[in-house]
Length: 272
Image (cartoon, rainbow, N blue to C red; front, top):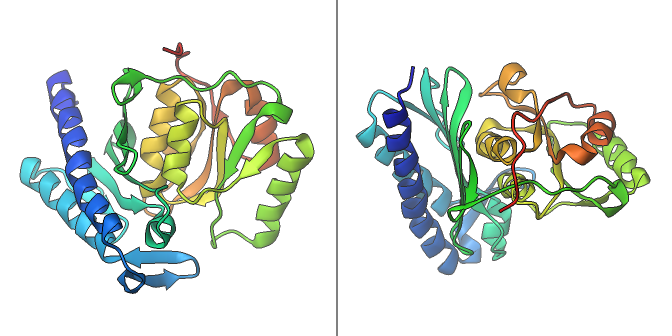
């Protein structure tokens, strides 16, 4: 069982390592060139900065908490009882093309349960932090999901994965559009989840998402009063799963249209 002191120590460390990795990522973004990226697969970009960021984060974690494990997008790793799940850059395609819509995402899980989550966009200098049962913040200010209840006035971001048949993706998107939702795709699922938590977006749907992309963001949305999918009890940290995070007022429509189960919001946040 983690003590409050242990969690506070890791929470302060999480903020520090997000910012130090952010310096590496920001430098890479400012000095990038077309020759700096390669393709891991269809629409799956890789840059030298991804590797540098993950190496930095991994070394910092294992130096400070040598008994913890680290599981990252680029280099994999172990998933022990106490594990850090790392995406060194989420939105690498945007990063490589010069679009400042990307982030670093790190979560800390104990026995599969998310305890801490952090997401940082080093260009906008927006740092999102969540601690289980203690709420979520953006640059230190408390967060709450939006109060949207009408699909025809709500915006949903929908991610895309090659692991899902195109027909299924299009079926879900069509259902959302027919219900009246504005559907968009901006290229960073982690940042999209953070923006559900802060109320700038109303929901995020992805039919397959990797753990390093979603755990921090799901904790943020949950701690900001949103409804999130059952990924933590049914998903696989190595294989990923189906993701939905939403403000409660449109949750029923979204879980129907995306065929994704939800758990009830555990707290009702109040917008600061």
